[in-house]
Amino acid sequence: MDWLIIGSVIFFVAAMLLVGIIVSKKVNDADDFFAGGRKTPEFLIVATLLASEVGGGVMIGSVGYGYSLGWGALWYLAPMAIGLVLFGLIMGARLKKEGDEKGYLSMFEWLSGRFGDKNDIRLIGGIVMLTGFIGSLASQFKAMGTSLSTIAHIDPVWGLLIGAIIIIIYASLGGLMSVMWTDLLQAAVFIFGMVVFLPMLCARPEVGGLANLLAYAGSNYPGVMSVSTADWRLGMICTMTVAPFVRQYYYQRMFASKSPKVARNSMLWQALFLVAVAIWTVLVGVGVNMLNNALENPEGAMPWALAEVMPRIIAAVVLGAITACIMSTADTFVNAAALTFVRDIYGIINKINGKEISKEKELKVARVSSFVIGCLALVIALFAASVMTVIQKAWAILGGGLFCPMVVSYFWKKSSHRGVVLSMVLGFTATLLCTLFASFNAIFVGLPVGLVALIIGSIAMPDEKPAVA
Image (cartoon, rainbow, N blue to C red; front, side):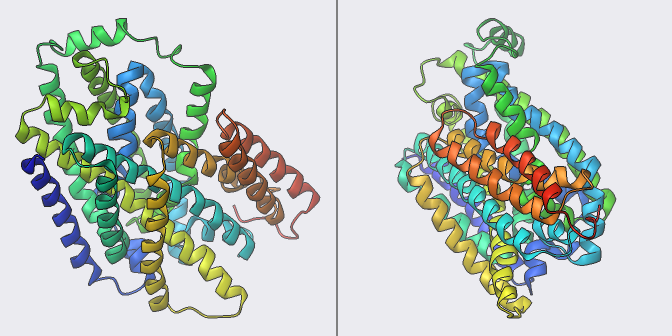
C-alpha cells in the first residue's frame, strides 16, 4: 500500500469534510440546503457545474473511451456541450426569474407550476428522477472503487465503501452550499491535474510528444464518423444532448444563481470547459494506449498511468484530483436526489394528506434522505459491472422519461397536464423495460413513446386553461 497516495486522498477528503461541517452551521432551512440562498455568484456556479460533470464518468469512463476509441470518445461529451448551450440560451434566465418569483427549488415544482401546481406531475416526476439519480450515483461509487483499487492497491469493495460513506456524510451535512464550495476546491485541483498530467504523459519516450500522440490517434483508431456503430453514435447524441434538460441539479443551479444573466452565462461557460475536458480525455486515453495497449479494462487506463508511469508525488496529487472529481459529482447527485425526494415525493404525499411540513422538518428529512439514498446507490454499485454501463443506463432513463414532458411541453402550447403525466409514465416505463431487457439504447424507445403519449394525451384530455409558457 502506497502511503503517500493514501495520504493525498485523506487530505482531500478531510478538507471536504471540514467544509461540509463549517457550511452546515449556516444552513437554517430547506431553502438554504437546496438553493444556497439564491445568491450564488457566476464563478461558483461554473465551478460547481464543471466539478459535477467531471466525475467518474469522465476521469474513469471518458478516458477509457479515449484509450479504446481515440477521437471517437468525443461522442460522449461533445453532444452534451451542445445541450448545455441550448439549455442556457432557452431556459437559464427564465428559470432563475420564475424561481425567485415563486420560490421554486426543484424542476418539477417549475413544471407543475406551469399547469396550475398539479401534485401528480411532481410525484410521478420525482419517482422517475429518483430512479435515474440513484443509478447515476452508483456509477460514481463504482468509479471510486476502480480508482482506489488500481492506484492504492485497495480492494475495490473497500475503496467503494470508503468513498461512498465519506460522500454520504458530508453531502448530508451542508446541502448545496457545502457541495458548491467543495466543488470549487475540486475543480481547482482537477484543472491543476489536467495541466500537469498531460505534458508529463507526452514527455514519456514511448509517446514522444504531442505531435506524435496526435499522429498515433489519427492512424491507429477509426475515424470519428466510423467509430463503433451508428446505433451507438446516435444513442450518445440523444442521451447526452438532452441530458441538461432532464437533470435536477441544472435546474437547481439556475434557481441558486445570483441573477438571470449569471444563470444563462454559467451554462455557456460550462459548455466551453466541457469541450476542453473532452479533448483532454481523448489525448490522455490515447497516450496511455501508447504506453500499454493491453489493458483488460479500458476504464483502468487513467489509474494505471498514475500507478505505473507518473512519479509518486505527481501520482499522489493527480489521484487526489481524481478522487475529488468523483466525489464532487457524487455529492451533487446525492443533493439533487434528496431534493427530489423531499420536495416532490415526501412533500406531495404530505400535501395530499393535508399535512403542513415546516422548513425545519424538511431540512431534517433532507439530511436523512441523503443518507438513505446514498446507501441504496451503494448497494447497486456493489453489483455494477462498469462505470459507463451504469451511468449511460441511468441517463437514458431520465432522457426517455422526462425530456418530452419537461421540454416539448414547454414549446408546444397545446400540452396539457394529463398529457404531461401520461408522457412521464409511458416514457419512463418504456425506457426502464428496455434498459432491463433489451440490448439497444433504451432512449430510442423512451423518447418517441413519451412524445406520442404527450400529443395523444394532450389532445384527448385538454386543460381548460392553457399552460404558462
